[in-house]
Image 1 (cartoon, rainbow, N blue to C red):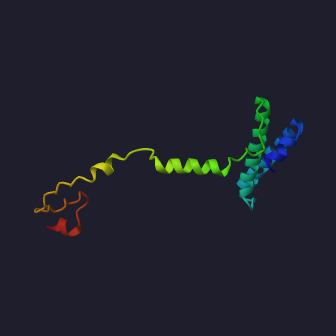
Image 2 (image 1 turned 30 degrees about the vertical axis):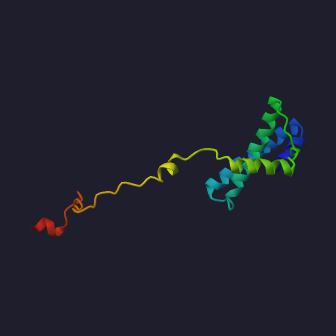
Image 3 (image 1 turned 90 degrees about the vertical axis):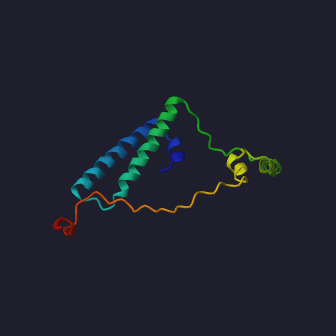
Length: 130
């Protein structure tokens, strides 16, 4: 069931389809609980159908008109000039790239390497005996 098909229907027909979809969802849930449902994806499909019906009903309630036609396309010449302008002018300046040119201070060599700390867990059998 597609939204375009639902938008053509009258409000009475939509409410009837809503009732049947909810009844079908109830039956599918019951079958699932009992273990008789072979294809569990049917539940999701019915839920989506219910959501579509509710969307169309709420659009009508609120007086929202949905535009089904695509907007006019911008001529190709205008889009090319916009892309070129964006390529020339950077949107932001990265401060890190400017400071990377400066020589970095050398870190002191690590002459002393500390041994890793022992883990605080249970002692092994060898440690307990000693």
